[in-house]
Image (cartoon, rainbow, N blue to C red; front, side, top):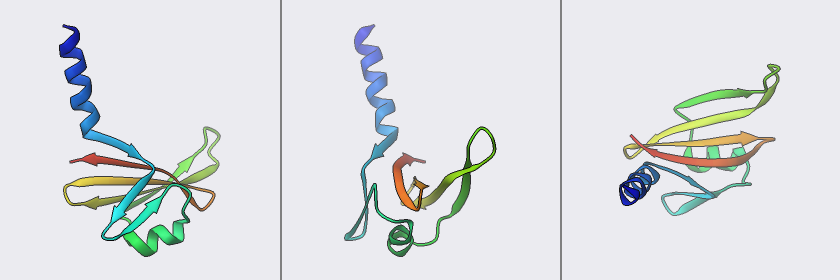
Length: 89
């Protein structure tokens, strides 16, 4: 039973990956890079949504791209890439 749970966990881990970098062609985006650099390298996002605080204030943005059968999401806070998440579609 224990190995079944471990195998299921490893399989799920392969479906979603949080990373500190993202490669687009021969260029790399790293957590901490500016939103302007992200737009220059990866282009216009497929979806752009506002991240709000519980009180309704603006906390940042979530930029989502559809790339090669996966969804790549960048969280932008204070004008910089705060996180990168890749998920297979």
